[in-house]
Length: 479
Image (cartoon, rainbow, N blue to C red; front, side, top):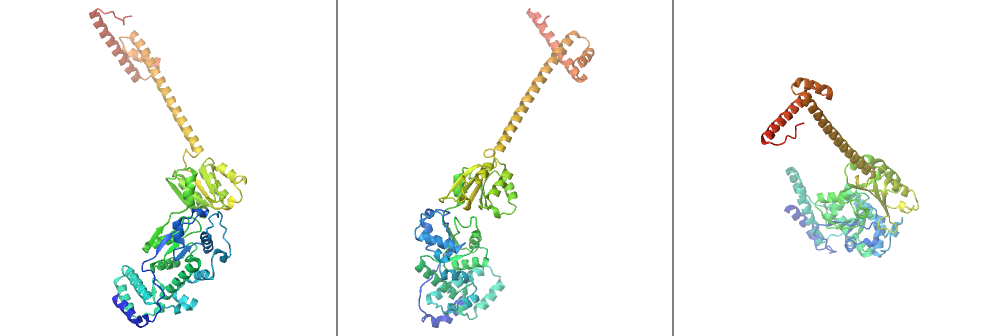
């Protein structure tokens, strides 16, 4: 490692004193700041968000026109704007040819950049810059040391002895001239437009773009992650970028901000301590099976839907949860045309088809749907089933009680009748047994049990009578 750094210093020592000093780059690694944007009302923009968006070096976004137009309005303090219609002309979105060109070259390889930007070879490297690149190269090698086998380390040490061409000198995959070019472009953009470079990454599906942005942060550039509206990485693929940053030990800062999910949950009146977010519902595969699965879990369900599919989605919810399931829908939340409706599925569907309730302009905006928990509190069908079950259960209890009373009466009647026969037939238990079997229509075993009870009663009465006679007490049992 030391030999490698020494050779670099020796290689460029004769040129360092002649190179023009043009500034100093940050010695620290850059930070990724997740910066939410308003979901409709620009007055929801905070001071921290403002400091971030105009302070970072690069703004990574979904769409450069949307983000550029938003930043233009924020800078001009157009806080009364409720509905942002993004112009198609990039020049009206505070973008210029440099912003468009940077989209094409920022993710190119070193060899591609030589052809695309020949001026990169003319970039000057100052002594301060050289120290900076040397430090960053050592950091990169240190990171790699923990991942390389011993054989790979030996090969790497041999490569470090080779002469390095400054124009091809790369740190984290970025050439020194490219970093100088980016630094100058960032400084130029901040001076002319008051913000850093805007870089479009669409849905962050390109691993090469993600790796390049992370490399820029490793080299000291600060990046803000934004989406078209709301909090990034919630219902978009920004989580891929965040996850890769975590894997690469990039520092991440998150700013609190607007989210249609939290706004809707606060306004719907359904339990929000346990909810499931399904994202944009229309793009989900087998969405009926998904809803059926979560129906079994009594929790609130949040989903986004497009205006051209909202009617079909409500019908799908009605099919699975029933027409009496409570549903909440929010249109253009926090905007001037905001609309919120709540009711049973069937009622909601009828309101959606009534232009007097939900206007066509509201159906063109963003829509948030919340399905209440599938419980008796929010579903009348379940409540009716519960009442029927309780009535049936109470009816069974009453029926069982009547049967027990009837059995008890019958038992008393049988015992009384058996006693009458027993008083008439005192000497022959077999005859009494047969009479009881025929008259009460019982088995021989039950008749024998009755005979035994009768004889015990008679014996007890005889003993009591003897005691009374000896005491001179009147015999109340004597007939």
